[in-house]
Image (cartoon, rainbow, N blue to C red; front, side):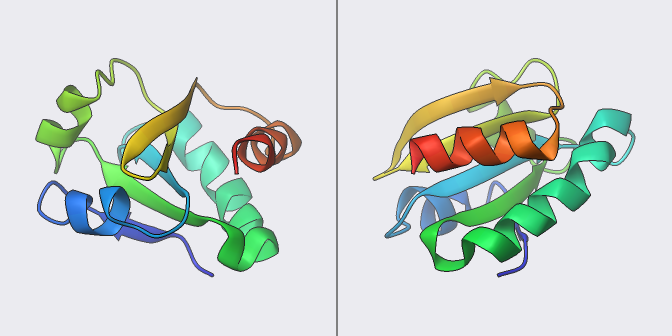
Amino acid sequence: MAVGKVSDADFDAEVLKATGPVVVDFWAEWCGPCRMIAPALDEISGVMGDKVKIVKLNVDESPKTASKYGVMSIPTLMIFKGGEMASRQVGAAPKQKLQQWISAAV
């Protein structure tokens, strides 16, 4: 499954009302560490397939959702389950660490 995109407009439908766990990557074009972890998230999405949905939210294009969840620095990754934030990770991390964090939460 490829990494999807969400915005302020469809965040509720795509993330909060999702049936399974959703990882949201709060990022921006100009953020180096955000671009650094993107390929790792793509790979994790491929490996974990249907177990978890991974989406990106551009904080410049969707500032409302970012501020609602108190995103102060990017990349910030959050795992949502059943409409609630279950886990949060701030900053870039190696693929293995990201995968362990996601696996532990789902």
